[in-house]
Length: 268
Length: 300
Image (cartoon, rainbow over all chains, first blue to last red; front, side):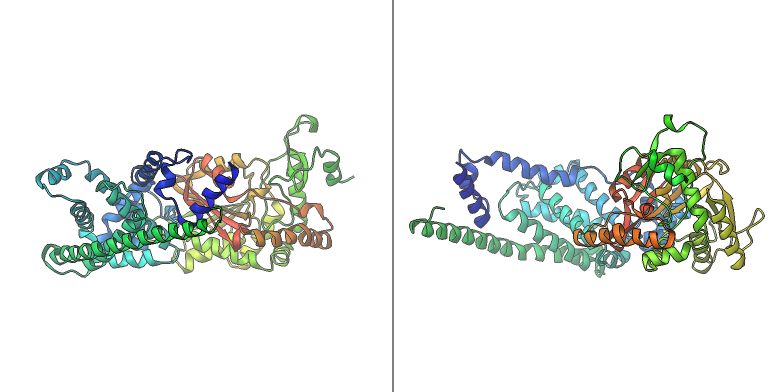
């Protein structure tokens, strides 16, 4: 029994989980369990509740209201602190400085997107369109999220600069990934194969690129931005299927190697 | 037999908890005043690796700081290779004292266990030169009168008035755990640098800090902490458990007093939260790989 466990560990180490082992009656991980745990993980990123205390929210939302005129700066944060009725020294609550405002915007807008998914507007959109596929849903969600940047888009390059600081890059990238995760969950994607990562990775890239494009977009009602988004999504379809095929190939090749070694008498 | 000898006799068991001691102090402490209970019925607390009665700790802490007041900075320089100055600069710079706009009120800063005023002078200097605020005032509070006398002397040498209502810096003997002379909700920024470990009752000190701070006021504590890198920790332990006690023996004629341990950053952040503060970010910032750390809590 012990050797069997060892074999499984080795195979998993070499090739990752495959559905054959997941479904094996002796395996501890049955497919349903795995699916549940994955989708729960996805939800936890979206439904875990706001990480901000009411006082922090009061300060940061007040600061955010000054962003269109003041940008993302220390003085904006100070205005937020004063508006919320606190002292100059209360600025120390935010060791990351003005990045706290950027992050607040990212987190609250992501949470807002989850609420949007429960709104009538979203349901109507789905009902009115017979062929409302996953890609259409992703596009609609990207557009909905990007619209929330409209008021501050002329200041957004400052936010991008702050997000790229070495001290902040981890929070900003993980927040971007959380956003992609939220979008895929809303779009109803529950697959748990290798594409779980590639889907989120690719969507993160598309979203970030479109957001940067939007900062420079002078067209009426951001029509160029939506066109740009459509092109990126079209590109990703081919990329996505290529990645999928590469994954399939590796899985196939890996099994073949194991089978060849077995045929040589190796106990794997 | 001296007080120290008496402390050894009363020792219950060797302790490796967050204890501490004297000259390796980097600042002075405000321990409680003696309250006249008999030693047998009193609780014990940590003093280096010894356990002693609480009232004994106060007198010990006071006794040792009396003797070091003048050579205080020299000792800190020797033992930290001068790095304590960088930590203190960083500490003050990060807190950014002084009013930030013409619409703001000047700050009232309380430097707890502030002794010779090295944090206080940095605060005033920062407020004036960086924020152009010459109205922000610092109250230096310490349990030890000798240290405060040294502070007054230095303040005068730097050209600061120390008497009168509007003096930029004032010195006051106070027990840090109670701060009887400081009214509720009257302080913008309360700092304590290398002093919290000398407190007998840290929870009480933290709740008193919460009491005297205004709504929105900030508690900031600079203190030795846990080195978070395993290899560096081994090196640092070698240094702090053998080299420092040896220097203590050479300079102050006392070895035991230089051995101590600190709570982890996380534990101390938990204590600050329990006192009613909201932590800034994760609650602390490591300095020099965690040899020291700045903990920040805000009263909201």
